[in-house]
Length: 45
Image 1: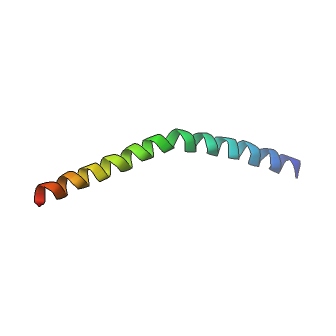
Image 2: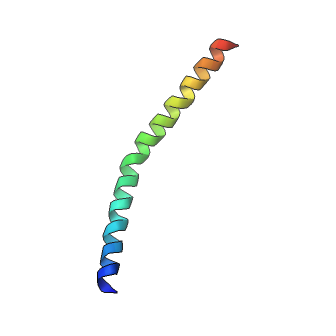
């Protein structure tokens, strides 16, 4: 029980770290994608 708990604590910490470091990148990518879509639709109108 104890080793499994330690493993999950370590896993959660790593997961939180990767999420916080990837989130700004994901937001940037999404914003960039929508920006491109908006520009394309503005040009076609």
